[in-house]
Image (cartoon, rainbow, N blue to C red; front, side, top):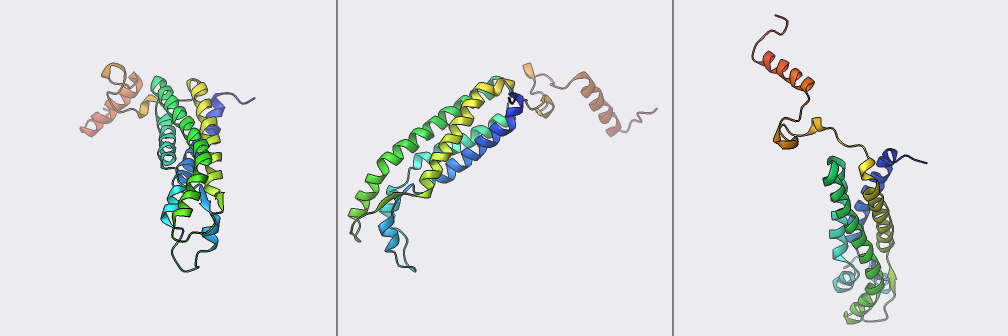
Amino acid sequence: MTSRPRSFGPVVLAGLAGGALAAVAGSNAWVVDAAAEAHQPIQGVSLADPVEAAGEMPLALALGLVVLASWGVVLVTRGRVRRAVAVVGALAALGYAATVVTGLVTLPERVAEAARETAAGGAADVTVAAWGWAAVLAAVLCVGASVLAVAWVPQWPEMGSRYDAPGAGPGGGDATSPTERSHLDLWKSMDEGHDPTA
């Protein structure tokens, strides 16, 4: 069984991949009118805008970006902040999954109605596009990785305090250790022209 610290890499990669796929899928139409696509002229206008817009879920793009951003923050934070961001990411992932389910249930009727209202008329052949199935996969990845992150983030490795800004330690004091301070003092004295060997 993989230890929780070792799970850090795979879970973060799955979360980043899921967030990226969620954002890209959220910017595309999930449900299309295949009949309208089949009758398009090769050199002409693409799908009628009302039909294409009816097959999209703009909220999915926003939630996908929130999930993706939360993984970026999880990588560079520690402690309670990291756990709080993981919870926010999990809530956004659950919201994305709910949006996917809602979209795939309601969008076919919206696309069919928009197709009936277009000038082209004719029977609509409403189908779930590849981006709709990609959104389902993204939802599974986002929710799975985010839930694991909330559960396991306290055991995951953290970025060292050496990467913090000076004075960003607890209480606003210097976060460097005594050894690091002595090295810094040595370099500062050499910058000022003092010979450390004298």
